[in-house]
Amino acid sequence: MQRVLIVGLGLIGGSIGLALRRWSEERKVDGRKPLEVFGFDPNLDHQRAAEKMGAIDKGAWDLAKAAREADVVVLAVPVNAVRDVLADLAPNLRPDTIVTDTGSTKAQVLAWADEILPREVHFVGGHPMAGKTQSIEGADADLFTGATWCIAPSVTASDEAVRTVLGLVAAAGAEPFFIDPEEHDAYVAGVSHLPFVVSAALMNAVSRDASWRDMKSLTAGGFRDTTRLAAGSPAMHRDILLTNRAAVIRWVDAFSASLAELRSTLATGDDETAAAALDAFFNDARDARALWSTQVTRDGELLQATGAELQPESVSDHMGRMFLGGFAKRLRTPPTRDDGQRPKVER
Image (cartoon, rainbow, N blue to C red; front, side):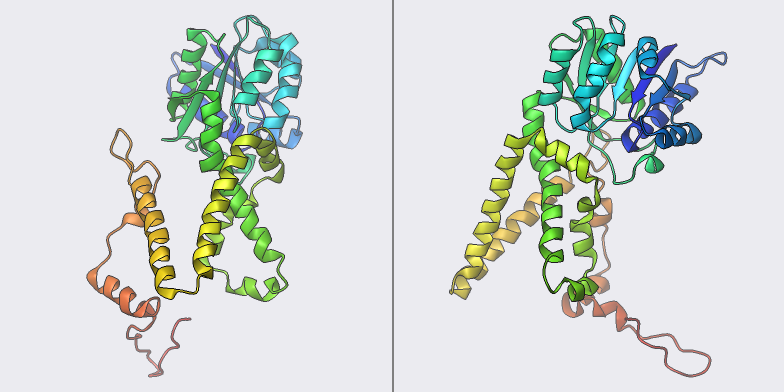
């Protein structure tokens, strides 16, 4: 039986535990499971919650002792906590122990692992591209199903260590993606880190305005969807940016340039020129998103779970939206009532 220690029992650590325990239960032979999953979290409420929901077989109350007993250690802690956790673990890990992580940046984490861990311990960097805003209470065994899981092994990691981590990724239902740590950080800065920066910046821009008290009653789906990431953990976002500064700055500059281009277009006094430029701006964005949203997996499933956006609509619905917008549904003939009165139109 292989013993897996999960350090950090929030959403990611709890979900990994649930996925591994389900996988292990399904492969039980003669009452014996291939994995024993135990976990440690300095927040005792998280650890108790993980035990209660079945995310771990048992809690580890002594991290040093748990490390000595582990074959595989999964670090599911905030990025800026990784260095301290590695330092706590290092003296207690047995030779050939495999350590992996789930951090959102990789170059800095691999540098810490190289600096702190003994040579006979194998570090394989990891980053599951999945998540939501909840903590342990939102843990889900299916959180990683179909998700990309980045793999960035250290130069000293053995082939066996890499295969073991790939096995954990497969058990969680994710798709492994080998990537250089520097490339990883450059890419996720644009597609993962920039989005929560933009979300937070939008939220701050409008909420700090003197009119926000009245404006917020007009917010709808677009504002809700765009600012959702601003509801995430401030500490997590802070740590990610501090460990990936150069890449994030590059993408903030690119985003600022795009906004500056739009502002310049709006500031021009020539309506015809502005209209053409705006058409190009929004058409380019729409076409790029269409290409992104229709990517498929090896099984032919939509990679980005955008199926709801691609549902066909009836001709009558399409024409109604084109000519009447949101009023198309509201203005349909209302049903009659038994008392003969006309019901109110839905607002």
